[in-house]
Image 1 (tube, rainbow, N blue to C red):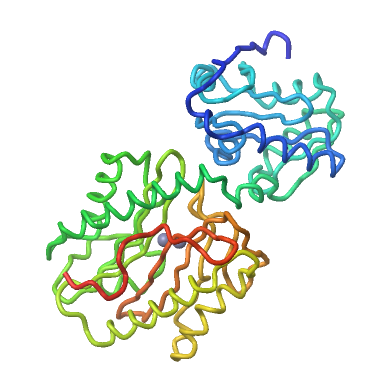
Image 2: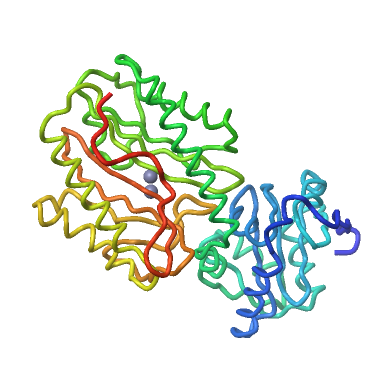
Length: 381
Ligand code: ZN
Ligand code: ZN
């Protein structure tokens, strides 16, 4: 280290970190380190490779940052971000990496005298792991699974508020775009207009590539909007989400342009019943398997079990897809404070698909629905 390290003192009370207690989050990880006999845990975000975890633990939003979390905590970034880090990273001195960062990190680990250092398996490339192992002599890298990701599953009240704000904006954008739908518009046009609306209305970004599917395209759950033009009689599927202050929302609704076929109405009613059964089932203590089962049973009983290929839902937070999972193979149990989607669907290839997706907060005796866009009947435009 030596010459390659500069230290900056950050501003004492960064506005962004005021309401979130990053120290509490880091404290939980330190407890885990002690339990597992590790000296430190590494969070490495290179070109955005682990932005969510680093943001969760420090408030830093840039694309290059390193956190060495041991008894001593080191936060480092490079000159592109030192000023920003000074504003965002609450309560930690900022070090500036100069030169090759893997070499810097290797040196810093040994200067701190760290012997056993945990590194996340989901967020570390094999290349980085091998290079670090080669360069950081005397340091044992210990692969660990999902430590920060597990913490992130249960949201703080502040996080729930942020997700609720993203959900509200998401709903509002859908209302806006529905007022602009006209025959002849393409899926891509609709997706682009809605994305622009979200960004103009306060979103940092969209939470994922918006899915707008007309007619037969809606039978593909992860459809990519194309040049298909909207025409009378089409079902239109919107799977959309805004990202606000780093937090995502996720909402799916299906509407009809002009009178829908009776089959479309019937499938809509079925999926709605499954969505309601899923929401009814969600509460602290239920397994991801059982929550999924509650909704899936409704679709299976109607003879469409084969047409519901994906899981019932997923956690949402700094990432649009995170833990826990609600699916037939889930190993998770829901806990109060988790934010998850409930999104059953029935897809009839070549014809159409219907999915109804709500965002909910798990509570001890049920759940609180964050999505407010109406769903009680198939909306006909
Ligand atoms: Zn979705
Ligand atoms: Zn989803």
